[in-house]
Length: 609
Ligand code: AGP
Image (cartoon, rainbow, N blue to C red):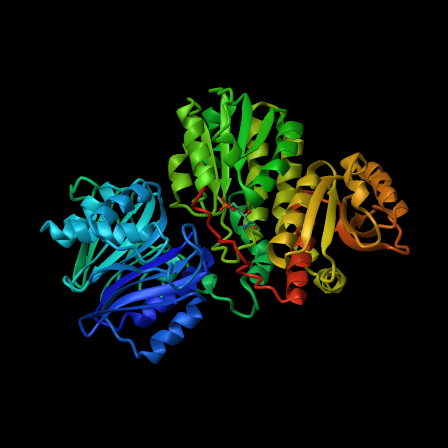
């Protein structure tokens, strides 16, 4: 979490810093700040609010500069406030930081003993003072940053500028993302490419431990021990449109409606072909998948829900035992490692600290067969895994994950088929049938999106409620979980999900006329069982909102509202059934007037434990 931007250029870089922060606001948005050299003097502006407030502060000051750093924050150490907002300073130098310094208390105590006075509760201020202390010993700025970062434990991406050395900015990273932008008129750095598209497409991804000096006429990169290193310059293919709102009111809305295209892009490799190849997961995948005896999927939040759907698919189609675990639990649990297990990690961002740590933990236990399903090709999680599948959802900016989820499901469906094929459990006929369904998935999703007007009406009724229950069975139970997560995340309505059969074992006690119960009712083999569970709700006065496939034959009646979905879509039905739940949350949040794309207390990439 947190986003940083650094710039040194012949143009006025203040608008570049601010625009960069706007693009990074999804990473954290509880305060923002910048520090620039304005007529040779360090000027620091900070705001406890959003980037827009910082921009008006900069406007009022008519700030102009050719070098500076900027930050948008998601609080870890210290409450969100102006005092804790970055940059943090120490006598003429300023630092912005993304990450967590685990040994900051020791560093702080040591610096306090040397007379340094701390103004904030952040770990970052310790970096600023430590850097100042190093500079006092006579080394130059670049070396001082190198010596400082070598003492830091934990994760960081930092940007540094000083009054005394106005012709270079220094950046460094370990654990947190950071890339350089090579501009026509100078050098830039930021937490992600979207922040730099305004000035350049030429980007250089820094590796863990790298330190870079940015000057007007170029840059250099060194390793943590000071050895110079060359890092390739990439031409980013990210389109500026992909990160613009366009005709939409919110990113979440845009991303919900981008799902047909995101799925088509993700499934492009099977668009023409009549068969599935394990090679889509990497060159060594054929061998790896064939040798897989078990599958362990690790993920967090929405990505975890996609894994739960995949468990149903993998066990029923590929007939391979599959376990799914929350990454933050797995990493600290004593588990029994098994080298024949394929460890699959799923992450939209590829940065989630718990998922990355779980992957490293699995590897440390000797499980070398690893696969990352991720939306960001250069991310830490992708680089850590032996095999990879990149979902092509495009940048997901809204904190609530939508198109990342459905494209993860598409990737997991492909994995299921590839595993089944490698193990001789996929007949040619089934292969054709599943691939045809996958190819038509974008069109099927587009049809479900047409239900929006009805869902909008339901959302009106919902927005006045304090609580909601979501029910599903089988492979749609994780979809109920995802619906509940979406609703609480952006509308702040308390929502819980249950496997419908579990209701009578406790949660039914919650049901009365004030409790809306949302049910996912695909016309599958569990429909009759689900109908009985819905009767249990009605008998207690609970109001039912049912998403029913054509053919489900659940009649509308007093207290039973039905939204008719298209024909049942078989194995891939969960992909269709999540769409109305995304729309329901979105419209409930709109009615409630919450900040849809930036819900309170959350951030898009959770790079802390
Ligand atoms: C979903 O709406 C959430 N914002 C969150 O649960 C998210 O899916 C989770 O933090 C995992 O993120 P990742 O996919 O980037 O690893």
